[in-house]
Every structure is written in C-alpha cells, then in structure tokens.
Amino acid sequence: MNFRRPISPIVLAAVLAAALFAASPEKFAPKTLAPKTKVGRASIAAMEQSFNQRLARLWADEPFLLLGTTRGFYLEGFGSVFSAEVNLATGPNITPFRPTIAKADIERHRKKKIERLPALKQAMRDMLTASAASLDAVPVNEQIVVEVTLSRYPWEDMTGVPTGILMQAQKKNLLDAQRTGADPAIREQEF
Image (cartoon, rainbow, N blue to C red; front, side, top):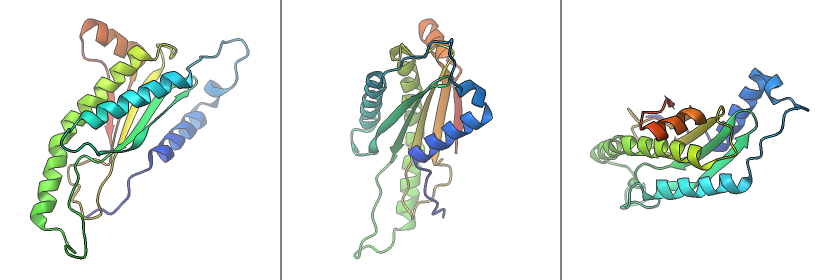
C-alpha cells in the first residue's frame, strides 16, 4: 500500500511557476515596450466556478467528490492554470466498529475509481476547450493548463490509479479544434 499523500495543488502550482521562472527568467523579465496582457480576476473566477460545476456534476450519486474549490491563476507569458482536488469515489471509513476494511471492499473501491477515470479525463478536456473559448484576454500562443489531484484513503490500493492528472494545450490549438471539430493537441500527464 502506498501511504504517500498527494501533492497539494497550491504547492504544485508554486513549483510549476518557480520552475518556469528558473528555466527562462528572461521570459518573465519586465518588458518596457511590450503591452501587458490583462487577464482579469473575474474571467479566471468564472472559469473556476464553471470547473466546479462540471466536476460536481460528474457523478450525481456522489455529489461531494470535489474537495474544496478549483483554483486558477494567470501567469504572464505562459497562460492560465487551473487546479482542483477530486475524490473519484467515496469509500468505507475505519471506525471503532469497523477497524479494518475488507479486501473485497478495497478491490471494489479501486475498480470504481478506475471506471471513473475516463469520464474525469473527458471533463478535463472539455474544461480546456471551454477555457480557450472563454478566456478572451489570454493570448492565442499561450497555454491553458488543467490539473486534478486525486485524493486517496490511507487503506486504498492505488494500483492503476494516478495521484494526479495534468492536461495542457496551446490556446490556438484548442480554438482551431473547436472550430474544425478536430481532436486538439492536448499534452496529458499522469503522476
């Protein structure tokens, strides 16, 4: 069993921002001649709310699987980043009356999570496309990133279930795919 806690989305976002800056600080240096992009907090907040609703509607039988709310921000010269934490399936709890979880329950829980992964990934792809169409101020050559951390219980068997999924694409590719009906070039990572 893996008792490792997933990386906090806030920590992940901070590490991503620091890595981007360290890799190419000249990209983030102030430019006196170039106009600054104005991506307002209101447009980011609207996308956060949209993501929350999409994630909450994924499984109507378990409406409390979105843990906290989606967090989003804009990085000048890179694009928009959105992060959320989701529990793919509620599971049995350890209590004084149930000090251990049966192996059959652990396996049933793992299978349920694996069955739900495709729906979560499709929702994330839809969120990328919706963001590209809604975030008008984000330049077309910049990225849209959606990251979902998957929570886990300490007793879980996470074989075949990632701890997180990250999807990103250039805004232009997402808009072109939406217009033509083609499959957008989305970079997907599981960790």
